Length: 142
Image (cartoon, rainbow, N blue to C red; front, side):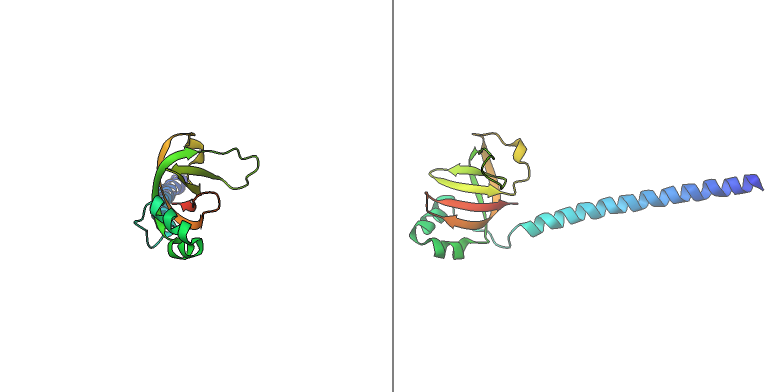
């Protein structure tokens, strides 16, 4: 009787572990799928094909109109990274110099991997345009 109970215990333990492994595998696939969906949700539905200098030219003419036209659109920018001292700034962001214009990048996935002066290409959603101190386009990276 003891050997039968022991055999049943081993059988059910193996069955349980096998089931747990299958559940774990399924959850891993689900997590991967959700991660892909999340990245897709962060990306805007529309993306402008205008360059940083073209967007800034529009902002210099009329910042309010440019914010209405470009706010919420995706864009791509490539430039030189300028990091700042976080002493007086609460948000994590960096500046990307693109010619004479600036793109302020927030929500970048790996800020610690950046080096001052490196070239970088980013995709982001435009959140604000300003011409007060030269053109600055604020974006949330995706």
